Image (cartoon, rainbow, N blue to C red; front, side):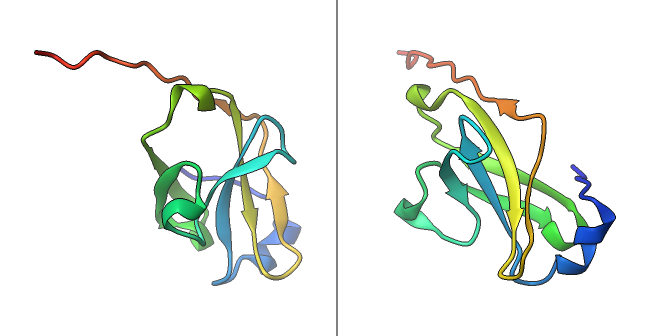
Length: 100
């Protein structure tokens, strides 16, 4: 999936850029940060594709029903790049019984 940021931010897309998902609102709790791994993230996952080319997808694993909420995607760099996207996505979780 391609994403778009205002052209004035393009120069700040560099190797340090990371993808972040925040829960509830733009300034909400960070539930996924592509720059960390393991239990540091509430929701496990990874980003495929290339953030620098604005062409990527986030794959999230083991999303718990209590995490159902609006999630906002944000790109951040070590420079001044901080950009959150509208509209948020709404995550729903359907729990299925194990088949016997």
